[in-house]
Amino acid sequence: MKKKHLAEIGYIFLLTAFTVYLILDTFVISSAFQENAVQMNTAIFTQLEETSRKEEIEENDTSAVLSEFAEAGIASAQSYEDENISITISEYEELGTHIYVADVVLASAQYLKTAFAQDTYGKNITDPTSVIASEHDAILAINGDYYGSQESGYVIRNGIVYREAGNGENIVCIYADGSMQIVDSDDITAEELVEQGVWQAFCFGPELLEEGQIVISKEAEVGKAKASNPRTALGIIDNNHFVFVVSDGRTEESEGLSLYELASFMKSLGVTTAYNLDGGGSSTMVFQDVVINNPTSGGRIAERSISDIIYIG
Image 1 (tube, one colour):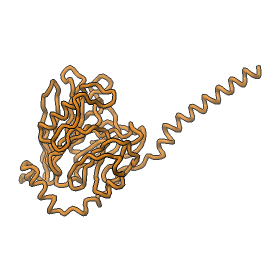
Image 2: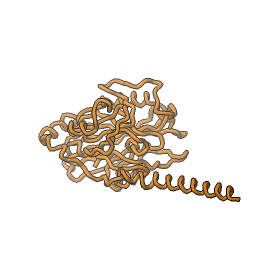
Image 3: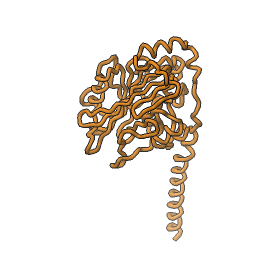
């Protein structure tokens, strides 16, 4: 009888200990590195002269020339323009897939911002892209790299380092001067990147284009993902001239793209450097508070909740 009671007590003890561990892991341990995440290290831009930034936007794209109505922030279904931001949205039908392209020209890289779900950096904190975008008055937004699904990989957002544990992978960096470069996280620390003027850094990957050339093989894929998927990618044509690309996929209307197809498409747009972000169910583009693609989640047309977004605003 005593042995039976001891066994029951031992079972209850183990069950209680396991339950406490799960609670700690989900709510306490994770909250230890959750932090308010609305800061912006705008001091990173103080070394840039205003005149040089104005010259850059004029040289990058003649479409950035301001109209007489620019200061009013006039928007249409397919474009937006104000004194600092020019956005043109185009939709393509390629390889049996709907692809959405946002051509973005900025007066300064400080208008390319990032935001965390619930304005909080940490584990198990998510919201749909459209919700995060609305909360930050984003003109345009796409999903980020879903940093919260990984335990390592640099997280540098708005000039602030949130995670400095590298994962040995190539990351894409956007600098305060409006340039974009892919670097090896084994070669440099997150703090050193910020000291060099990195404004944003993402670590999903892989890289698609460098110096205008495709650097991904036809067989390459992300983890166990299917060959054709919804995709999200970030590219650059020239300083402060960015291209956001989101494709549909996994539906009867849109098959989706392989990484090589995505790279080839972005090269055709004149992109010189391109980097793959979180795709699949995460792939979402929001323009003027409207989701303009067809994100798929759980086998239906719906947004997936994610950790972070990239936005213009």
